[in-house]
Length: 120
Image (cartoon, rainbow, N blue to C red; front, side, top):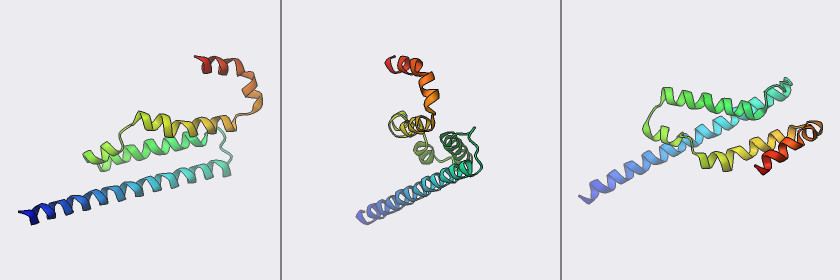
């Protein structure tokens, strides 16, 4: 009785390890694609497409492909939208990149609107 329970536990642990390894690989590949998109945008001087927009588009495409080709419940739970992760991890770099690439002239032209939104 104990041997079969231990065997089932080992199988579940191996499945969880494989699931985690595949998702880690997926994240690394997506980050690599985002870096490649940023490189292509800079080399071809495609300034009408911000790097953050390209990263969001890569995420949408990868999410759609994952839902289409590998729609297991565990995978969909892993890829589900988490608002806390978005607000605390993903949104700050997007805002930073937008502010970092903004020209001073545009900033000071819209200073009233910026202060209004900061207060509200």
